[in-house]
Image 1 (cartoon, rainbow, N blue to C red):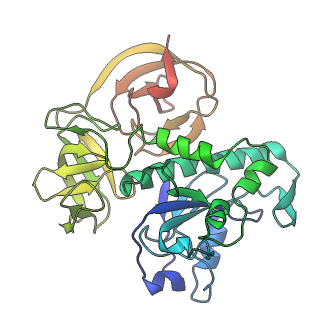
Image 2: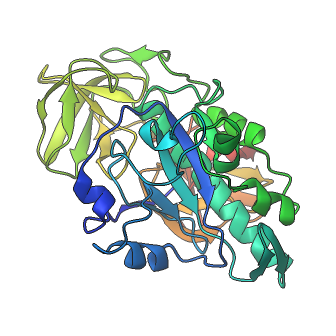
Image 3: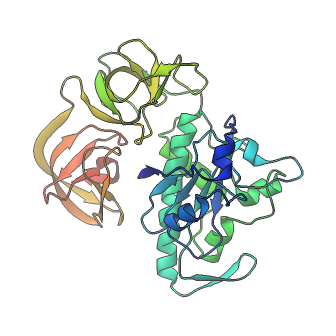
Length: 354
């Protein structure tokens, strides 16, 4: 998942500055044939756009996630219903839609290029799974608990949103086979089986968990105001801010890292906040070539050994590939393999050694 901050600083919702205690996440679909997130961002980032504002858009062309509000800001994404408004409790994210659909009435539409439309829908769905997994970890949310992850349609049924049918209307209309129950299960799987309030921890010298190297390891903080907290969760009190720089992590728990200085815990699983640098012992790696078989058509090739590295924009496709180096890294339990072709690195979670 590529996450880019593009905050709508001119939108009245942002300037109002209201905050929420995040209790859930709501998934939306834009409801018009526009795959480019930039179109919405450019239009909505205006003082005169005072009727809507969401926390993020997922681009239909490449799956990039654009964060458009701080996650704990109160958005204007779902209206209200008989029992109040999900704006007061839920983060709202919009998935962009294929350019080749045309709406006729309500949520009914026609499609001129089904294969392209399905590819866009799959791309946004997969990115939404990764994003929601990250946010569930960040806010200690259980994705399969009642009312935590809902669609706009489900929000309406629960009395906390206006009458919309997204995003299920798009999935059903394209015969994708996606459901919100399936989405919630996919988010849980993407979290590596961890749930709110649970998880393991690694002590000094222990093996890495959740795709992190063995501690101690270093992280590079990319923003000037990353909070460090008294406990490894959003409920921990803020003790200060790190500033930009390289810091040593000596313990990992629930996606949070304890600073060697003893100052507190920082959140590790948002690559726009910080990136993993290396293990204190130089990282766990090995050389020697071997063959792996990939059965997925869309396994990402990355620029480095970890999900904190960007993708090259290419996929392996199905086939047998030669791995010339392995290394531990963020986002893969089995580690990462460097392709002999020089194209980049793949997660060995999705490859079988032959």
